[in-house]
Length: 166
Image 1 (tube, rainbow, N blue to C red):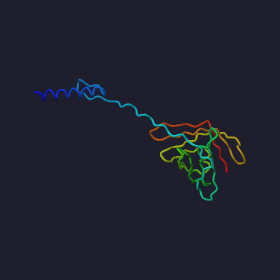
Image 2 (tube, one colour):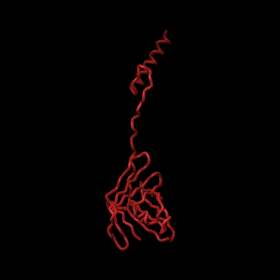
Image 3 (cartoon, rainbow, N blue to C red):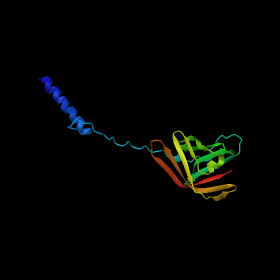
């Protein structure tokens, strides 16, 4: 008899614990349980990369920079060949992130506003169609930079400028 009371008390406590997290279905039919949405992690802020160096050998390159709020947040370049893939560099938490272009096209693909990937991040430059002369052999475009990480939120930087030249 004591055993039956003890088992009954344990079952009652177990049901009470379950009732706190889920409703008990009296009909004993399957129910769909919706999980709370996970908190979306924040992507670390980009930091000024300044005059970042990218090893492209001795080839002629087209170099572009995304600048916002007085800081250079992304530098991208590509060798002077239509079948070349661009590269880029950004900095988060004091660490340089090396990036690779998702499309071939050399400096023209970089100038047009590239999508670059690396270290689980995607960097997407969206620039205006019409630019203005920035300095000798350089053109500047109004632009925004969007940084994404799969399964996380995205961060947009801008308005800024996408400046390309030699």
